[in-house]
Length: 351
Image (spheres, one colour):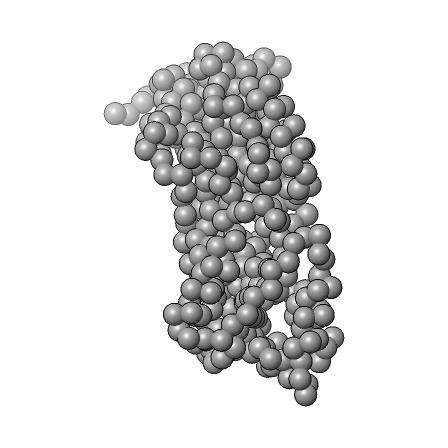
């Protein structure tokens, strides 16, 4: 169907008039967006309310909204749907690269679905975690995603809650990486690269969590393969010095008793590499090291150490999908996502 020049002029005039009205200060409406995009008003509503609509129409609406400067009125939308379109995220800190990348991906996943993210930093304080949970509930957010260290955390049943990396209760779904599989894979890789005596090093919270399974997976492989191995398990309050003392005690005639070390995080791996260097032990020449997290990869950088990579973007998407899922009756208590291995210079990987 072809339009004559007069019809085209009328359409252009109408669109120009709408844009001029926007510039004069009147806020654009969904009707304006529909007119600009050349779609029905119902299509625009579906796009901004996460309804089912074709990708071509979705893009037309989003581009039209951007041209007009249209913004969704979250308050008005919330009155209609009985939602606030806000989610609280509780994390220990954002100094740790893993937590900061996780926060970034959670924010992106929520924004994509039309939600705002309120971030609370607890600094590993159990009391602060409980206070932030209460505050989030009082502000009537639509849900909470938390990485918490309070073994007695209380969360109201009426508020959807998704726990990251830590079991809270049978009614609270927990999203985590395959920590057991990651520990198993790390030990397997070290053995494949010629290591004969392995060591697992960990420092962390005394509160039980999914990350504890990294040691379980490591030990499971070693026992099954008949590989000599030891573990050193420290609490955060112990600091790093016990690691140095342990390593010094296991150096004989300039050689470390272990030729492969798996550390519970990349941060610890780099710290151990530095300690070993100060003691005259080189990685990967004298000892091979593998960490856990792979955060640098998700930041677009080459990993500083060989590592077991957590799928951070997928973890964030999964947390958000589960939180916003209407029917949670069929959800398992633990949703476990696969990990992978990435070389980073602290192992002797074949070229």
